[in-house]
Figure 1: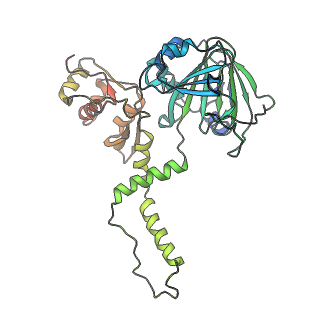
Figure 2: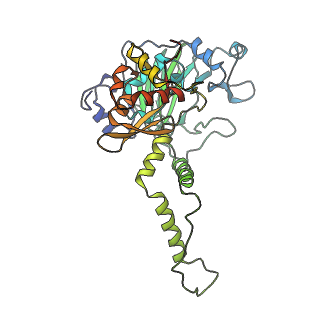
Figure 3: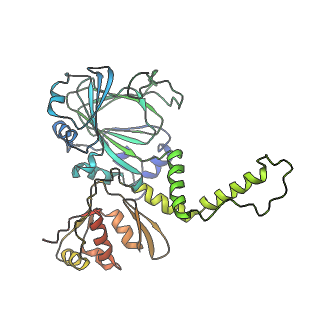
Length: 390
């Protein structure tokens, strides 16, 4: 789809218009973003996920048994939900797209944004009056109303110094003032886009309120510097050291002079100012799985010839739920394919197909060494659907 084609998902704006006017700039309310939308998930399904080991789930109770705004972490059990009151609480489950294919399919609608920027789809359920309080997120998010009704209020951009309610486990704003005209009730299929730093407060208005939060990855400068330093450190080893072959007799032996600081600065810049190394690290970092233990490697190596035969017989592979793919062009015919934190060089067109198509079939075998690459990705758990016994 052209970047200038109007999209109902964006309220009639084209992708280019949305990015220039709203992305990381200002909120956008979109009535009927997905008209006739029916949630692929029921509240009981969400509660069931929250009871499973390894699923990241939180329960927020405005008037908890121990204190106000009490936060409990899963896995939960049936008794947890039985004791809850009729209103004033919220259940939040992260990465539901990693477990429910129908939820994961929603991500295909957001192809106007880089796929590697997507984080996950968090789903929240709340009976009437349920919320997590007024707060600020430091990432972009699309809030899709899946079922029921939720009342949203926006309070501008309070900044990093905004006061928080003390003594609780949530970062709830102490002072929240609704901005004029920033007050809406969303129905199923409606969606609200929020850039980072915008204060917002959502309160359930009905018994079956499900909200899907499509969130985006935005590593902090601290995370980037720390992770890249670790990566560069592994590449450099300890052979490159501080040197001062230009040293002159010091006038004051105890002084840490400007020349010494400049030598360190040059050493640092020589180590980090390498665009291709930055690209290699960034590709690995932005495709790291959200949960490292979710991808299950194959117990035995996958024979490339058997995989080729299975695809030629009509079989298909698919990206494993939660798996992340990206590519970076190296030259006219090759690319680095980044998959779940690893990197491999392959045919450029093959890398493009693998990152854009949700299904992988025999047509990909036309590319050089495709069968071996696909077998490697099956073995790592990044691709699913091949079974030697089939």
